[in-house]
Image (tube, rainbow, N blue to C red; front, side, top):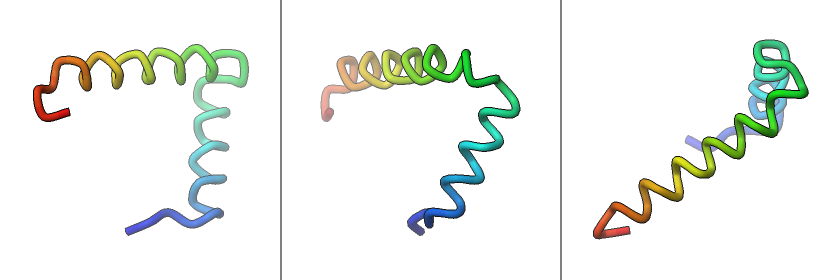
Length: 45
């Protein structure tokens, strides 16, 4: 089930409220690094 524009905006708003705008880039970078490591370790990947 794809997310609509309003759902994505709502999720972003909640993230900004929870973590603060200054911490979001760091959080996104760490999630990206974790995803990259998982793909590297996945033989089907």
